[in-house]
Each structure stands twice: as C-alpha cells, then as structure tokens.
Length: 172
Image 1 (cartoon, rainbow, N blue to C red):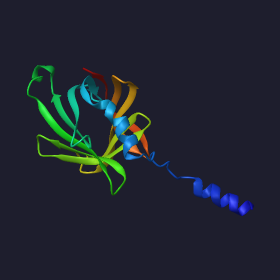
Image 2: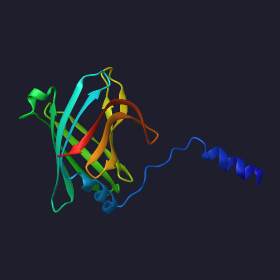
Image 3: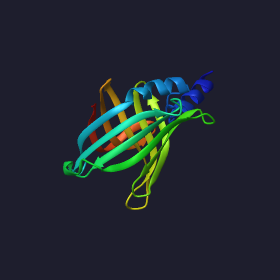
C-alpha cells in the first residue's frame, strides 16, 4: 500500500492543472458579456501609451463573435485607425473555443480561448524579436459587467506570468 501511495504522490507532482472544460453554451454565455463597445487606455511595460477601442458583435445566428479593433499609437489618431479584425468561434471537433486575429500588416494570430469562470484568456504563440516563440495570453479578467482588467502576459502551465501591458477596459 505504501508503494502505491508513493507512486500516486510522485505521479501527481509536476502535473499542471488542465484548463476548465466547458460546453459551447457555457463558453458562449461567458463570452457574450463582451458584446458591445469597449475602450481602454493603458501603458506597455516600457512606459509607452496604449489606447484601444473594440466592438464585439455576434454573427451567423450568434454562432461566432467578431471583433473590430481600433488601435492608437497616440490619441490624436482616434479616427480611422482600424487595426484588427477578429473571429471567435467554437471548434466542434476539438470541443473548445478558438480565435483568429487578422491585422492591417498581414499578420494572423490564432489560438485558444480559455475561460475560467468569467475570466477569459486568448492564448497564442508569439514570435519574439529574437526569433524565439513564447506562449502569450490576452487576459480579460472580469471585474463587473462593464469592466475588465486587461493584460498581455506570458502564459505557462495554465497561469498568467510576466506582464507586457496592463489596462482596464470599460464598456462605452
């Protein structure tokens, strides 16, 4: 019996908690709170300003979420600063929510949306300037129905790590 307990204890060490498993309906119910118009002003880790406005809508009989993003280098460029077009949808084969983000420079980022309660993590691989890849997350941490704490951070072992940017999104 002691051997069995030691094996169980050893096997249990080092295992990462799996992200919460949700049904499509549960995932969409959490994500639906984002439908509407949101704005944030924050700072990158290097101190430079971050200003973004997004609009989240449902399409295709509410089976997908689309996200239109305006991103501003400085607040003077507030009009016509379209930056990204995103899609969030349930992958029925993999039984999880995924996302695709298309930017004005021709870049495409795709990954998984992990939902933990009302918090959402858009997790993806990002190529760093030195050519290495790092797993990052755009984390939307629920504060109330009209407010999310937002951060771009490293994401390892199912947890947020080093922050590169933080801000607060408010519903407009």
